[in-house]
Image (cartoon, rainbow, N blue to C red; front, side, top):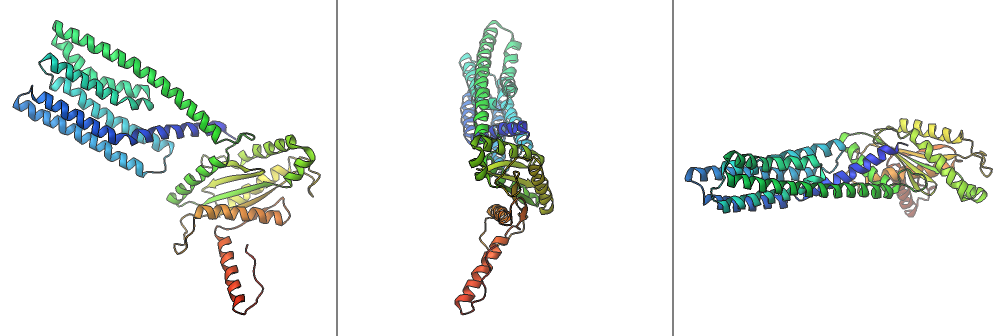
Length: 409
């Protein structure tokens, strides 16, 4: 199997959590921007003329409007529950763009309303630095992103005080440059910590999602992918199929050859799963013990059966000796089922993902009852229909119609 793809998916999951954290803090950022803008506007209004006060009010309105817009796109982000790599990049770009605009408006204050008194100038510097400290979470996206925020906030006021050109403002520019260098060093340090933490999280998450023996996804990762792909197939009106694979007479194989050979057997089976789970949405996982599961989004029942047969034949052709099997070689029994998530019976309280899992499970046991080393199928929901018919037959028998009772499928 392609484990590089698994690793990239894990990194993407960590990145998604970081972006979720950024968006989760947007409300706090909104109120922080609002409070700082109110304080700065009140202080600067003491130093401005009536015309400048009007411009200051416009500036304040821009801060509020852009911050409110960022809050609105946050709500849109939270409504989009299924996030692919492309969507993650899209939302990250939106967040960076609107944050850069907001910080650009903050940076413009240093040129448009530069106060005359030194005390007020120092107060303005402190507030602009506090804006940059509040933007530190953007380091979770990239170092360059934060450097951009530093530029749009500090560069305008830095160039302005150098342009003024007297000794006092040169000293002020030197102090601002020193503060920027310190902030730059702090940002580098924090980014290195975040990068190390991201890699550690990705490694831990990959370990949690990987079966330690076969090195393929485990049940946890399979269930997470199942939920995500079910929602995607529902949204795009696509079929979704599942294969449940059981190694025939595996206990007898273990008893005869020992657990070490049993582990080698499972590794051989897992190594062949990549032949039927090649697309990005496909996933093959160890489902537990000697069972494996393969999820095939956008795959019809006929195509799933074809892939299952190809896999069954490939295992049989391995020629792994198994004296306790009637086939004398290692074989597998495969249950295949397919669902169309949009074909729902709203009158019944049914969890459709569970229906697909149950149908594939029933089909797998049917294959074992029919003699193993074969494929059996069951349509999504057929088990439920069979159970209903069985219950109705039981009711008829209670009414005095003792007909032969059909067994559930």
